[in-house]
Image (cartoon, rainbow, N blue to C red):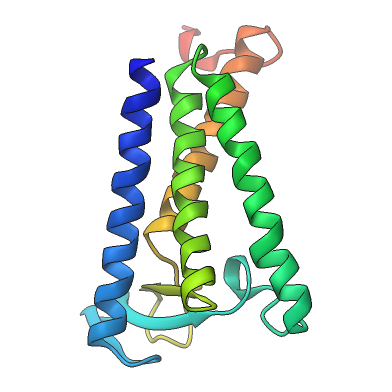
Amino acid sequence: MARFWSLSLLIAFLIIIDQLTKGAIQSSLAPGESIQVIKGFFSITHVHNQGAAFGMGAESHPVVRQVLFLFFPVIICCWIFWALIKSLKGPFHVSLAYALVLAGADGNLLDRFTVGYVVDFLLFYWGDERHHFPAFNIADSCITIAAGLLILDYFLQKNKAGNVPNTLSRP
């Protein structure tokens, strides 16, 4: 039960940090405005993401976007919460992964319900901003870290089952 409450506090903390950073961006930068942090590499840029990851689906019909980006994610968040509860008896990193996914999904879902799009602001690029990785936010970072933890768990489980040789323990 202690793990559940610890992860619940972490989820709440991450959602609050995500929303505070997005609020700070919205109040201090106009959409499209940018502050260079590391020349040729990183800027804080106010971006409105109408779509899913990397803006996919942003040009879809508004009804399709409502179903894909409001209704469906609520169902998925309920499933992730259920998966989190089920994972509490297993390895901590799996529970942590589900908590991070839930925090990230909820943070972005809050944006969609309150302003109709997701606020992104972390922009990494090479040389100039024309050659960039899509802008993202704290919530997206949580989801990405969770994906890494779940991939790690996959390989740990395969190794445990003897399906993947453990090259680290070989002489």
